[in-house]
Length: 615
Image (cartoon, rainbow, N blue to C red):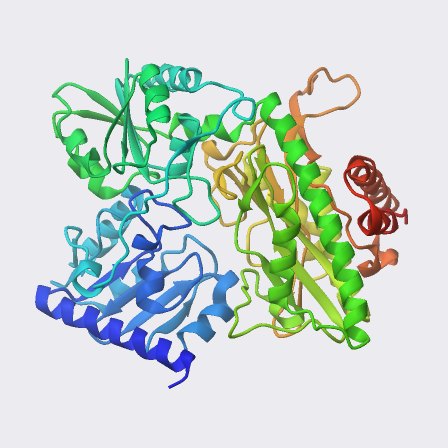
């Protein structure tokens, strides 16, 4: 039996075990989300339940297993991947238009019967999602049981909690003290009328307490919960994870440590009359249900989620330096790549998508402050580039040869910031159709990068600016245009998101200091993909008569482009660029060359100078 068939057979056995567990417990179906007790996007291995049970390795998706059906619901970023990974497993690939779709709920209400019971682990489903699910099922006479984790029945070698130590994110890279951040959160609690606040989201906790860890691949965070009260805070974290010197520093700020599994008990012990602030989108059902009925609950967005999204002037300055280090690493990588590609055409070693990942990571590892990649590198040649979240593996990857486009989406975690960049470069000859797609995407990226808009504009409404040049050609793409980016934290953070699939809620408002990606794309399944991505910083707009972005019609924002790496002009159809777009690109390349030149030498410098020549 080959490796692929062995993997599929293992998944079939796991689905069979889940069905046996359903039968034993009297359930009609089980729902397994891509989630953990912290509602994380990227999961510690202990909670990678959907991936383990289904074999689908994408970062988003929902598995439903019933007595006679199993399916994974995934959005367009993962359709090709899901089709391939689920083939032969007995699990259907269920296509949904966008992340956040509730099509799996619709399926259950249509296919299950009155009196049936659906199981979902209440400790990993969000409060808001659980409420929506319970209401939809109840309308059809279907019950929801959230008391059981069926994975414990069928996953005999389930990983334990992660054990790497926690460490401090110290000055100067953490410009604001832990005490100051806690004081701001307490002020927000007081304004909301709360005397306690429970936080489960890992990036909020890491930011708030100026701590970092390595419990989750690519994200410098650690598994913990926090209960913040008027005069003290409790951090619920695994035994032995906090070194003595960090423990002492926390104690000096009245932060006490308690076992990780004690968080639910602490909520249950809150006295009658207390007022607890929770974020219903960032807390699981199990924690909400642990709160005594005599405790008043105030629901609002975590104050730290807002605060960490708005980078201070000092943090922004550190991020700019991280971008310089990242750009220098990319210059060294692309200089190597072009030389190696030329040599491979003359009989030298072949370059594969795996080689790209290896070399780009090695280049970053030599730069000051580098800690890790910020996500798994996406290197997709031609057809593989048409899968937005493609990942090359030892079993399936392409050799970079012939003609076409190579898409590389990568990023780094530095002590001074988090980077995320996508570039597309030519391999051999590039067709007129490929150049057209590349140029349309570039026009969309520039349109958003040069936008000016009132402060407080709901971020989803900005999405159409990047799509307009692409729509004009009768083309679209399935993912959002931009996501928030953390400060030496998660590469995806909120509350802002530039996406047509996100509701324009008040908490999505654009504010100064927010770092967001700008990454439109075009994907031709089976042929090629184009995505160009820079990170941008929201800053006060500069226009005639404005003072700090304020003018006669109010306060306006614009974007400062942070990412520093040439955009390959060999892929551009110059006839499609307006004069102002051409000027933007030339000005951008002057900035890239000026800021990166002091950091590179030899072939990297020569490459930088060549790739930033004006149009």
